[in-house]
Length: 284
Image 1 (cartoon, rainbow, N blue to C red):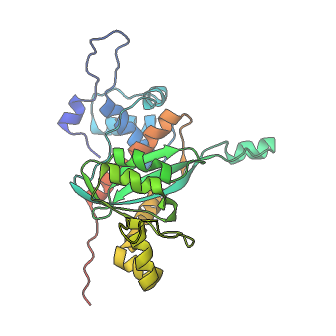
Image 2: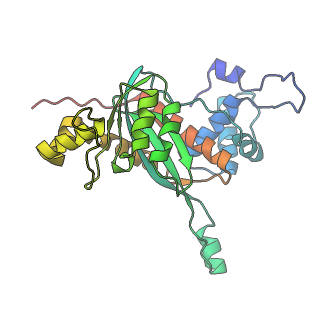
């Protein structure tokens, strides 16, 4: 690890001209500390010690934010939105659960009472070509996947060529939401087994009607290959990468800090992917 001259210069916060206390650390300093905390799965006090050790080993004259400052600033920290840098994207969407960290095993064994497990739902949108996470949304456990489509699309910069999701996205409002922001985008979601064509299927078939017709002619496996629905496995790989590298839980307690935690995790995974990604070439 190293500090560039620009990062060292920007470690301290710029003087504010409005009323209120003067912040001591810039957003860059807080983001750096919280990123290390998330990647190495540290507590706030451990993060404070790690930052102090790194700055001491590098011989830098920089102040170290303490654990309470990190916790307080994480509530309102503005993390740049993840962006793959592409003007035309094939979006893959899915969701997974992140458990809320509760009392440790020692407290459970001491008091003999296990706390009720809680968790929140993470919605992801990734670029099929680059693997970058371009949109994230954290909701309650009862939120359905289709209701978060508009929120995810609002975070995407550029145009969407296709929108691919599992059967949970086979909804009229999903088709309408994608068409409202990206009229030329294809919506690829497997219709449920009891799906029937619309009333205008003969004269003006919708995208869903076309999916049903293709399934009737070639079967579901044939439809998956023809529509490239099989690419949806890539977003499942991103979720697996998230849980292997970042973990399957949230350490923060409030909604604001949890949202910051998720945004920082997505940025860290994108940065790792930017540093090196394997390229596969078919030879036979």
